[in-house]
Length: 187
Image (cartoon, rainbow, N blue to C red; front, side, top):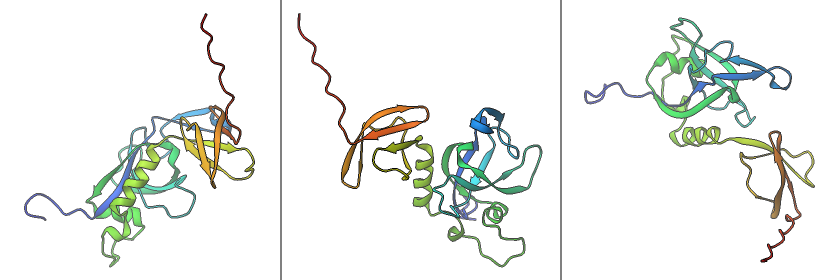
């Protein structure tokens, strides 16, 4: 306990809620409420990234659908989550679920097994920023992500590319500037 105000946090973590509706199947045409293991709106705690896929898949711990008191740990797509934020972690059981430490381990709990506050803030901000795929003329095979809506100009490797087209499937950039609009004539 700290000066009578409550327990000492064991660290910080990125927290999110399961999206009310998630898309599955071919083309994302199958819409479900929540996901199989978690109800819509369920609070989940996200472990720091374990592999280098840019946070597309994440390890989460949360309470299973129904009346579960235990935390379960699974890997899900971050696109199934909304409302990312940073919160303090107080529960040793939650830390064990996030770090896969077994009960009875002599492992000491602390921020080293969770997120640093700066890292958590950066990831939460990144996940809260809508993104879309972008294709850049002359750079085949390189995947790019831009904000949604996409910026009018994109600078890569010292070259400025201009937004040529975008729709729900993504944006396309060209090195050619957009055509000049004819000036209105007064008449």
